[in-house]
Image (tube, rainbow, N blue to C red; front, side):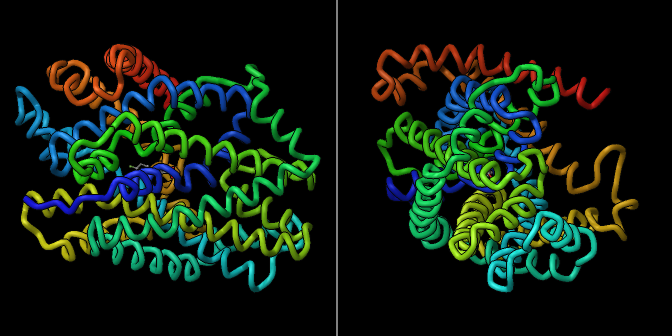
Length: 447
Ligand code: PFF
């Protein structure tokens, strides 16, 4: 089968585009705020370094050697039990589940881009009303922007790896880096910066319970786009003789860098203007707009830039969430790219409507199951369960099932002596860490 190839830069930007997403700019700051700051950040960073990086290389390798969609790649390179291992490729379904809430949030961002023109809320309480009215009452606004997000994302995926995904990333990612970098430089000049630094890097271990531990590890997977085959699917289109080690290093560094930089920037603004860091999912939609209002004309400009950056980050990740299953349909059933993109798009669009409704006053009761509504369940099941589970399966597959010589021949030339360290971490550290998370989950879920 023919798969269009990325250029080298195209691949790095597309993989970084997948990793750098709402997870970095929207989710990371608010979960850091909710979980008390420093200690949480430390667990997240350690997981990224010790587990995330190893699994990133493993996931790249599966796609790079398999040269097909997730299902086909597992099947092609499994040395035995091919019929069983191919099911591991179905973890790509997690991407569509993530899209169920991801597309709704991208819709909120589009709405807020418009709000920066029509007038920012002038106080936190006004901002709260604005956000909560949209979230709980205003079904038509959310539906409208969710539809725009669906149409945009689906039409990009329809254009394929080169004409759609690579072009999108080549264009949007540099702008995103410029915006976040520029705003960070400004934040550096404010007094609130030292407070933000202390909040993010001085650990207070009393704030870390098993719940936040699971969240931190789950987030490391989510933010690096690991465990569901997005990186795998992109890697199937890598040029020959690629240096996977270098690519993984750059992607992990960019993703972690953007998360830390946007966290520091946001908390600086919040502390500078006396807002609360623990506001939850509404942090960037409630506290931040009110802070931007306080900053005057510059704030208005920042607000616009910020929401544009957030939209770009969201879109470049969204296409990577849809692509694995689209590629599967094309490879397996010879479906046209248009049909495959549209059917996967419709899947997340329709369930996205259910997610959106589950936040509204009118439907929340009917769409709440146990402790969470539908929207929160999808977020929790994907980030905290499916991605770590997918990562565990990949670690076992590459670390214990594939022949070591095969891995060595691809990776040793680039890793040098560090190959053994990587192999050890993939075989033992990553599975054990993931297993502990799974055990912890039992506590979190009160099973
Ligand atoms: N990494 C993206 C983010 O941080 O928002 C989300 C994501 C994209 C998760 C692709 C998983 C994935 F396969």
